[in-house]
Image (cartoon, rainbow, N blue to C red; front, side, top):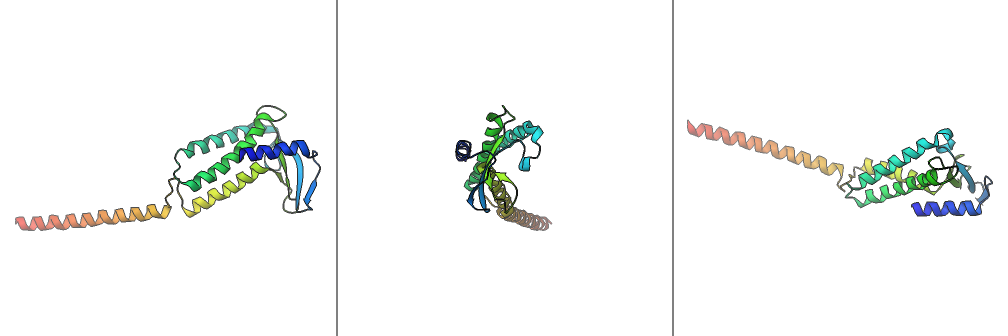
Length: 180
């Protein structure tokens, strides 16, 4: 994911004119080389260093969580998310105007849908977050089990404990009666 993002950004810098739309599918899809100093829609352009710190923290958390993974699906989803985060973090760290305040290279525009210009890393981030939400909603845990499996196991454990309690009480009652 990181390599794909950086390769497309390299091609963009080398081959696309800066801030001139290049129609691919008319108004549906255009290539548009832009440098984004902020977040989505250039929000926060004056505090780029905050985005650098946030991206580094998110990447660190994803890597830390990866050590607890036992689910292949979670691994793929978090890998896509990490690839996207690292793609934009790489731009923040190593592109102009300087370390930790670099501008992210964007190149994909769909003017009919929204006025945003985005890149491959952004696609991985958005798709990764949608997938995270779906995995949470469906109850898939990092260990590969489902939430309902844990609920059912807890219910069985509660039922078994209740049965032991009833059997123990009955046995104690019988024992107590026999002693008289």
